[in-house]
Image (cartoon, rainbow, N blue to C red):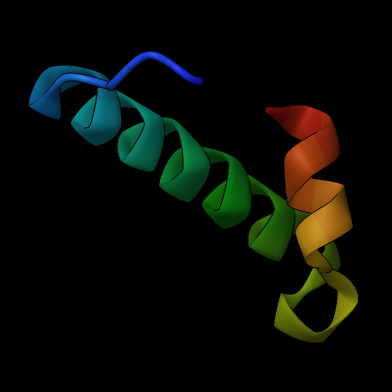
Length: 42
């Protein structure tokens, strides 16, 4: 069983995910980004 994440950990992850996605969208355009690309950068 995975440990429960705190609200802070969840918020930090969401912030990181959005930052990574935004950078990729700038680099590749929205159509050029997949979830796999985002996951590789996390």
